[in-house]
Length: 286
Ligand SMILES: Nc1ncnc2c1ncn2[C@@H]1O[C@H](COP(=O)(O)OP(=O)(O)OP(=O)(O)O)[C@@H](O)[C@H]1O
Ligand SMILES: [Mg+2]
Image (cartoon, rainbow, N blue to C red; front, top):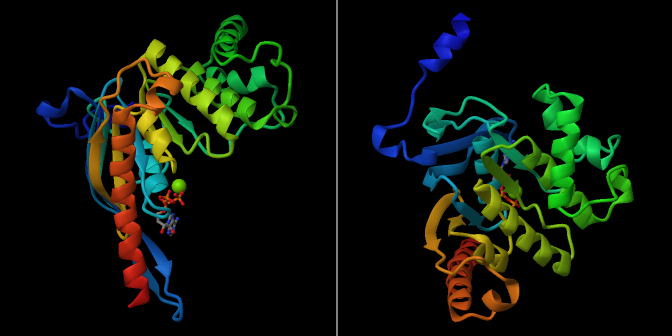
């Protein structure tokens, strides 16, 4: 009991930032690594000076070169890892660990292979202690939403990559987190399935008003989905630029991808990322 009271006294965000769903304030993350030739520890700075404010219901995508700290950032948001310095708040409260207010969807689906589609989706509901009837009712709703009717009793190995991804999305949505954190969730599916999953995700987001932080290596995907695209640079991982995407919603693939606005955003982000690549190549050749 005492512990709970102490926790509630912990730091909360500035009054002016209370309107934001997520506030990331000057986060820095370093890892201790072994030096290559000597056996001593060195500090490796993965994230530095990382600040971002996300509004409730906003869709944020994050792009950046491999190793720039995207997953490090998402793990910190998820509460799976602690920043070395700086603070992260959700709903004005300091994040101190993982919680059911955040749904996490990692690359590679991370489904439980011994559970059927239905039982995978019910996982978070079990943790919440729901009755059997309520669990079934909710899992049915999300099976409908992601179009997996008729596959309730299949096991993950009996599903295609795109279907597994939908189960992962349904599982994260079923326990109704307000924030969805997605780390390259569509990286392993074919281009056609990927485009339909993007549209489905936008559909779900529009219906449920979730706040989404979505990491991707695809510039097109980042632009198509986002309200804002965070472009990162590497060594150490920092925000290079944040691009506002003013494309109309609802977004329909065929119309959006051929528009002038889509192409100019895509080109701008490509230039920002390419600039980074040039820099890395120059440094490597010195
Ligand atoms: N536990 C760890 N210990 C030491 N270094 C780490 C650890 N986790 C990540 N790193 C390093 O931190 C940097 C950022 O890693 P991170 O996984 O966040 O990159 P990323 O942007 O997600 O890359 P990718 O696009 O390839 O997934 C990398 O250089 C990585 O080697
Ligand atoms: Mg990563």
